[in-house]
Length: 234
Image 1 (spheres, rainbow, N blue to C red):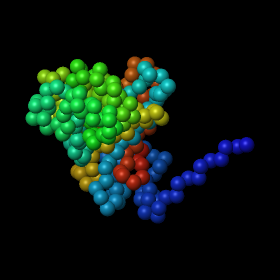
Image 2: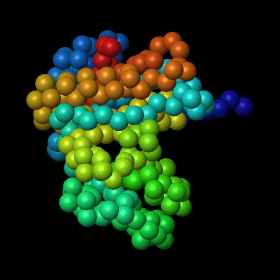
Image 3: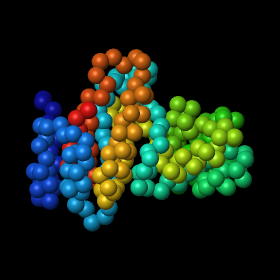
Image 4: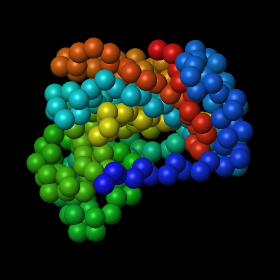
């Protein structure tokens, strides 16, 4: 018996009218792509602008995992709630961390399985203790890791918290070999979105694993929340 295909999702008239402004077969230069995304961001709220990149990697091979971090010069337009796992609570609190603790914080998360923060930083000495909640943090992409720059020495913690608050983001490919990242708001000046895009793409290129051969950035698209995608020439 042939496997039945899932019916395509029905698009609203609003979406279709916006999508008609975009040539789906064309790859646009960055400036034009940004303007199109801004023009087609027709929600009642200030839409986020996202970049989606299809990577030429084999997700079944661990050595081809893509991950990294970068400080976007204009942030993402979202205020991030930062949790810090450290014994030096005063330094972290003074630097602006929203949630700070060590054993008690880990125990609370393990007991309640509730997460009310957007990013987690940790000092190296507490990583062994975090193993107990790795199954809670990991699926949400919140488990601190040296590769993503979220395992930080006490002396560098204040700067790390400051960077996150300013717009530092961590990225990693998903199971389908794609990377997704918010780079701002549709209401922003085009120049800010273009700069954030360029900085992010530069960091993504640097994160290319040595094991990956051939084309790395296979397809790049910009979109707004609930808006149509615009392919970008890379």
